[in-house]
Amino acid sequence: MTARPGENLLELTPREALHRLEAFMRAEKLPAYRARQVARRLWADPVATFDDITELPVALRERLAVAFRIPRLEVITRQRSSDGTQKFLFRLHDGQAIETVAIPEGNRVTLCISSQAGCALACAFCATGAMGFQRNLAVHEIAGQVREMRLVEDPIRVTNIVFMGMGEPMMNWRAVDPTLTVLNDPEGLGIGARHITISTVGILPGIVALGERPEQFRLAISIHAPSDALRQELMPINTKYPLSQVIAAAQVFDRRVTFEYVMLGDVNDRVEHALQLAQLARECRAFVNLIPLHPGGARGFKASPNDRIAAFARELKSQGIEVATRKSRGMDIAAACGQLRVERLGRRAPGAPDEHGDVQVA
Ligand code: SAH
Image 1: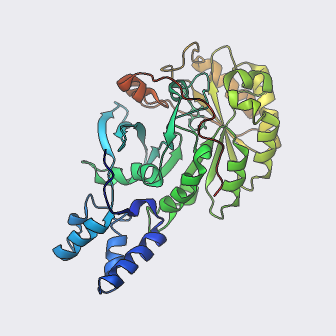
Image 2 (image 1 turned 180 degrees about the vertical axis):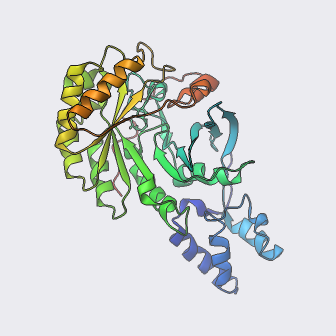
């Protein structure tokens, strides 16, 4: 595709975009309030095109469309599960495809967003891991997944965000960092920091960088095994960031962390695992989220039976650990990490695991 002219306003934080628009209005000899009118149409009350900002004179809309861009993400498919979960597959400008899942629960709608196309980490049970790394997403592609929910037919009011779609957010911190600002800023999407969770395999510099942000963003760590030996088998990243270091990072993180633990039948679901996990959770006062395995994409693994999961949860509780078992949602629409893309587009050859470098702390 040929690059379109004009600066992409959705790559900027709301404050940066406002400054940029104010400079534009000054140059056009127009009043400053025009900049604010445009700025609130980027995220807070989004429009599909500049032409839809009907509160502006037509001539100004046309000038804006020459100077700037507000790119959309193209919906390839939208599927609805019988339980109300909706899954979107978006096509990006270079043909990459990413997934977004909207999960309603009571008054809340949690949007599960992607931060990379593909993933380099190759966790053994994960469909995204099997497809390899394609590229990092830009700010407007990550936050744009939330923006699109307001623009699609039958719009969705998102109240909570989890970075649990495709990719490892801490390996794309350069874009995730400003994206958090866009999501949280009242002039942006206005979602409370406590309602935004970043999930990571335990990329240490990323955990430190998130901890340095003043907002109360939540951290979830994919633990999945209570010993280095087992974690190594499931998550190759454990060689670079071993469990003990991840636990130490969680201890110094100044807010409550959640451990994610996917229940793999006969692999990590025995009582002795629960006891070891309880010890780790105690060390950093973590909340434990048990995740039933989504079977799609998890070749060679089977889900733990429900009674096994219940017994595991009971064991953790008896050790004084707070625990919840996540409900599996969207089973009928392949809603686990990476599954829809695999189903639609097939698997691609994995990228070299290190081609994207390490976490970039801006
Ligand atoms: N890379 C980040 C975020 C994306 S995955 C991370 O790993 O935390 C979000 C969560 O879904 C992770 O805990 C991941 O391990 C889990 N997951 C991946 N494949 C799954 C599957 N087939 N069934 C259940 N959970 C899965």
